[in-house]
Length: 315
Length: 303
Image (tube, rainbow over all chains, first blue to last red; front, side, top):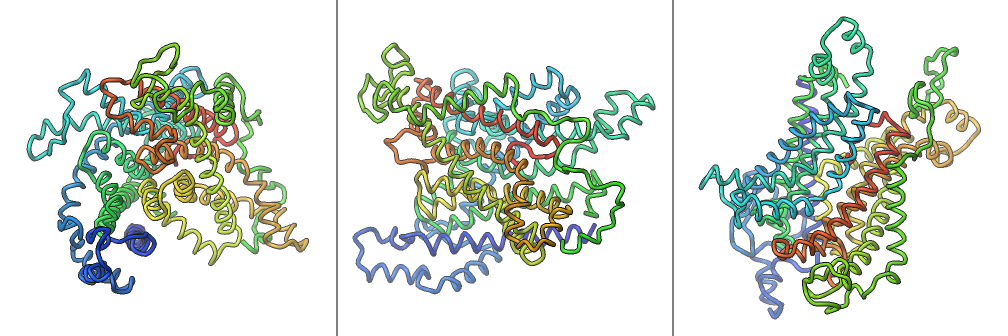
């Protein structure tokens, strides 16, 4: 168990390190125009430009810049945005809770819908109802974030007005108001994701229901609901759990769009703003926080898996 | 992988003829059949025809400003109404099929070629190759897809080709993983050893013996990925990373009409419906193919 965890943890740290280097070098090495040029403006003389570059440390060799940045980041110092003068960590600390709340609520909704639907579809596998469930699932899955987001925004503005808010309400200001206004964005993220959970649950359940131990349970006269929801579901759960970890990353994609539609001040919009400002010092931090959350989500799943299925440790 | 000849296997029970094909109870069926499948194929063919011949069918030029009054509701002259600049929505919806299909094709082709090559090489060559290539793929896989795609675009710039390439790069791990897994299974089989004993080189074996035998899961993956690539491209286009503005594109049409959503919902609705139908057709096709060709792959539509 400890060895298993250690293995997962090392790979998570490795991926984060590699990613930080990737974002850092890609951002600073390849893109035309750096932050100094943006600050100095188009008409600045080469001397002013050089002075600003020196002040920001942009005249140092790249690997030095990276090492400096990395040491800082490990001490919780993500630098100061050269454009706005804001501390990057502070900006991220404001944006991250919005995105994580949205992603978590979306994930909850996806699982709450997807899991039962998948189980029902599996027990009716091959019959009319199976397709009756699967086709609506595929239809819903075809709704990308910007379509579901538009629908949700339209519905909330016209019909569910107490769920609508033109601007974001922080949780600390008004807890209930926050949850109310986050519900529609979360639905817009969660509902199109539910089919993923349902499909995985369905195929995993079908496989388990065909196994001999289920037949044995049936011949022993155990109630059918008990077989389905206690015996089969637990065995069928590991691939679904793995998928849930993966979905967390899928949701991040939804975030970029849904945050844009609902004007939520989260990480998704933050990343887009940093890109258009060419603010790579901020972008690196934001990208890393998103990736770290994704990796952490998968790590949590990896930790939870052995509790559901002991055999996984030996793989 | 090299001394598989010595693998203990009783001569009386040879390995099943096709490890990827369904169990004995499920006979081989024609891959695509039935009402749902026909609808899906028909829809896709329709969209392809629109993409190719759309410019002859469209009643107005897709970028023709002031073809009608601004934001008019659907009418006899403008079947799907007009947008905020008075451009005919029907013509724009038709014109948008081309970038949508092209981007998905580019992205999936790129990922299919690169991902499959990586996967086969990792699975067949093993050892150091496998170690390096698998780490690389794991690294790609460990980054949230949209984040990676947006970062790639931030570096390379926006546009149809760059956005497709970004999606292609992001999709590589899916193909690489499935190709590697299937290759490991095929490489154990005796005909591969036979080819090796005949003096065939490693690249010959990989392309002539392995590749055809892992085609079925790759076909399924391709079908599934066409729909996800479609969605990803539209999402990137929504965020402004797709084709340049005056040209029609589902994502950018929806994002530029977003501000009229609450007053004139059809400006958003029609491109959205056209796009959802397209993605749905690919989803259905992928789902059916997976069902018929390979009921044992546990890949949900996006995984």
